[in-house]
Length: 208
Ligand code: PRP
Ligand code: URA
Figure 1 (spheres, rainbow, N blue to C red):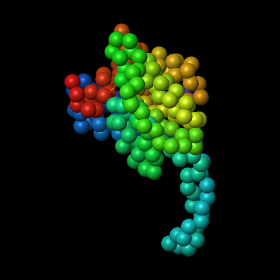
Figure 2 (cartoon, rainbow, N blue to C red):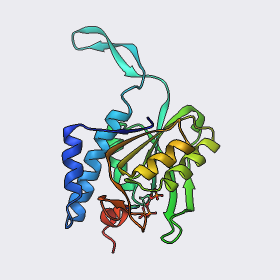
Figure 3 (cartoon, helix red, strand yellow):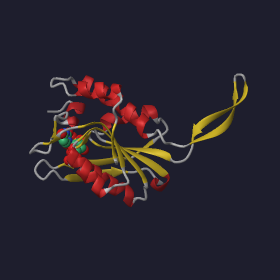
Figure 4 (cartoon, helix red, strand yellow):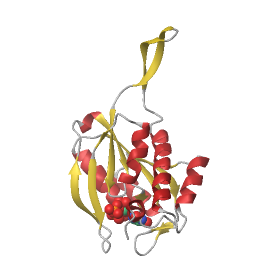
């Protein structure tokens, strides 16, 4: 199962608060980052550790540190920016790669307008962040870009996923795992997730 619904009570509580019709931009941003932290915690649970020796206050001690691949966080513009700080709180040394995609309102296809990747993607774990997995067109396009640059460990963090998007992502990229705070009912005729959050980018940036 490539999409993992995180059922932690804090996540479920916070994603519920995000659904309030008249939520303020401030509250939406705060909750988005809080959930992003919790999703990052779950998505990094299998990172390998290695022992190292340190001078502890009480003398020599062996502690554990994260070994293996370095991380690049990949926000999908615009709305992914809303989750970036939360993930960086948990993985503060991560480098940031940025992908600009905008979903065409008529075709629902992602239109690519920007990309800036860090180097050596073949040596990094990519954590893609975007609040919404609707048709999954934007997520699939971002995974395509990362794979083309040699990235082999790709994980995604989203706030809300639609069953249609989950199926599409699984078909296109069965090796990519995606952690979500909620799996919702379906997409409406305009490609919006129901019950969903509405337009996440507008809510994070205060537009419209
Ligand atoms: C939203 C969202 C995802 C995409 C999801 O972005 O943040 O990137 O739509 O839809 P999909 O799964 O059907 O591709 P949007 O294109 O509206 O742009 P924005 O983030 O700039 O507001
Ligand atoms: N993008 C959003 O911001 N919300 C949706 O429900 C679908 C795509």
